[in-house]
Image 1 (cartoon, rainbow, N blue to C red):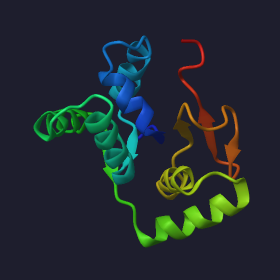
Image 2: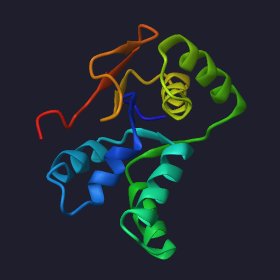
Image 3: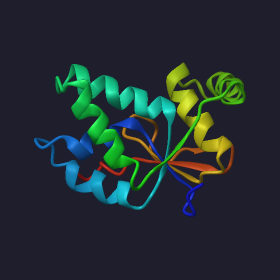
Image 4: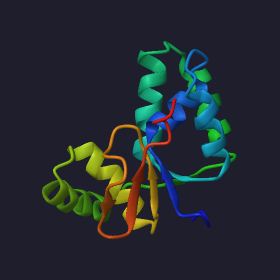
Length: 136
């Protein structure tokens, strides 16, 4: 696990390759800090790179392989899913948002980088949601 206990949502990975977005300048340094991501984040990123950016699978694999130089990928397990159900019920997030939150909690992360969740919210008194793109 990463020493800094940070988790990155898929939008961080996507902005890192979006040449048209000023958010790229924020996303790349975040990824260089070595956050955790889950297999779900890899899947979501791959889907957006395929559909929105219309990249072929070879290019997507190259991009993901490049991320693997700095990030740590953690698996989604049945335990993760069970935590996600509880988090969704308790906090009202969608299932997939709850699943990435569960992955972060399960891996003892204290910061969760996401553009899509409530900035500043603290989940389970230990995971703080941070939107690194608020100023961009």
